[in-house]
Image: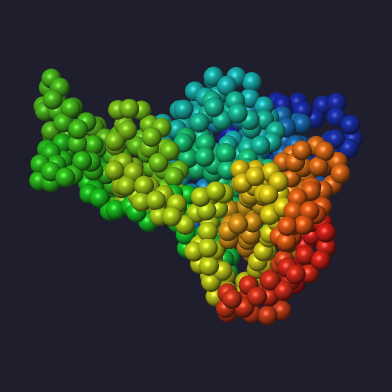
Length: 611
């Protein structure tokens, strides 16, 4: 720490002798306390920085500052270090030291990146924190408060939300932003979220761990993400440790992430490794360049247009001139360089001018007095259907305001409500043309496009061809309406079970009749097949009369008109992979699957046979 910063820190450090904390301590506690005191006196805290990156393109949003004690010390690890501070009533002293060192070491990353600083809720109440400790350091290093995010950690509970919210509001007004850390664990619950209304929400690593294998976690994260979109909160997934976790988060549309797989914390500011950035970009290409587009797969940025912009210094008279010179301009974005500041809609602008003294007040003054500082803003990669929901959820007065689009936090363009409706209608009509009317699953055109796409690449895949055994006999006895219900039940089982393993990248298609297909981006499909068969065998019993279930067969005529006993319907799954051969022709792949399916037909129960 430089001399000025160290002197300032010591001025704020409460005199040890007045605290009396060492009195009455046992020998081992006194030893620990003395080691902790040495850390405070010598400022021997080490600061590490871990990047928070966009899961759309791998660019760095900012860095989280993480503190460690001296190497090979009993207080080296942060959990022990901060717990010791709390035990001896020195949380403020430790956090102020950590914050001072983080700001000093990070002074050169601004304004390109943000800095996330961990803050215990109890410290925010401290008079010294509220007297502007952080602000003085920002002034010293010429750092804009807008580049600082206070991460409210769950180290301790908040007893008085009302007072806490007033303090947070005060910091928001100064330009600081707030993130709630470890959402999903400890005290970081709905009350904290509702009261604080942060700009960032960091999802606890326990919810991220093995999310690629857990359909329930995926559903929960989707719901939280939808909420964040409506509340204009940016979501950050913490603790990403595997490529599968990363891919699943990208598939789900989560905007930001951090974790050891992306980059470990280091004392310096390193760029994201090129191979990780490339992987993020390639995964997004797969997601956005899907075999078909509907409102949930197309990014809003793909249909956004540039729109007109003005600087914050523009006067009301200057804005009036722009509106009068272009009758089709219904609104205009206020942009400072690349930074989006707000929105002025034409009808609201003229309504302001029409008030008593409106012209006199606003014509010579900057439009920042008139602009909407909190318009609906969405990131480039937000799906079209999400944006439509957000736009329609606005107050009636704002319903037809422009939707503003950013990319990497820079202004990108605008979307009108008319654009949303037209594009949504067009996509849904085109998409519906290629769906099976009975099951709602993609039909043969989309199946062929998907197969052609995977065969062009070199990534592992498995194509599962599925059909229902003894379907005709069931149809003959129970009728076509019941047969349709059986097909719909099968489609639901295939959809539900595959979603547990493949998240947003799953593909389930309906070839026709009782034939279906699942295309998986892995060779390991045994567990998927097992669960499909188990679920199908359980649910199909509900479509039979009890007496047929009990005896295990139905009686009807075969194709030659002879009465015969037919077993209950079962399901056969034939799998073809590119593990041992590369397919370039769909017909050859289908032929191989047909040969495998013949093996399944020799077994009189639900079965799967993978090449």
